Length: 83
Image 1: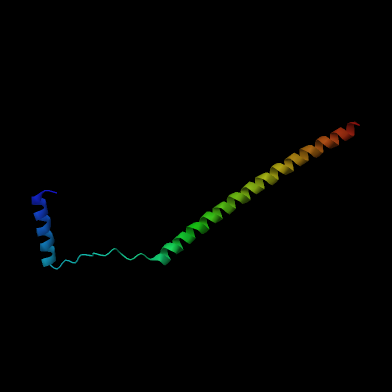
Image 2: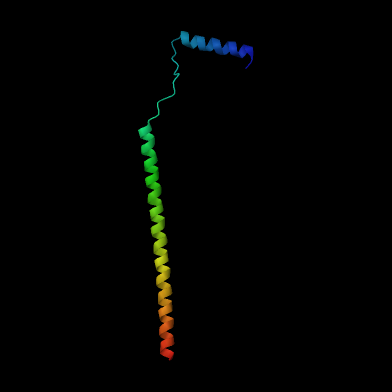
C-alpha cells in the first residue's frame, strides 16, 4: 500500500470513529448446535436417498430373477414334453 493510501485509510478510520461508527472486532459466534443439526439433517437425507437406491436395485434384481426362473421353467417343461 502506498504511503498516501495509508494516510487516507487512517484518516477515514479516524473520521468514522469520531462520528461514532462502531467496528465489530470479534468474529461472529458460531452456533455449534445449528451446525450439528444441519449436518445431521444432511446425513439423514443422504441415508434416505441411499436406502431408496438400494430398494430400487433390490426390486430390479428380483424382477430379473423372476424372468430368468420363468424362462428356465418354460425350457425345462418344453424338454420334458418332447421326451
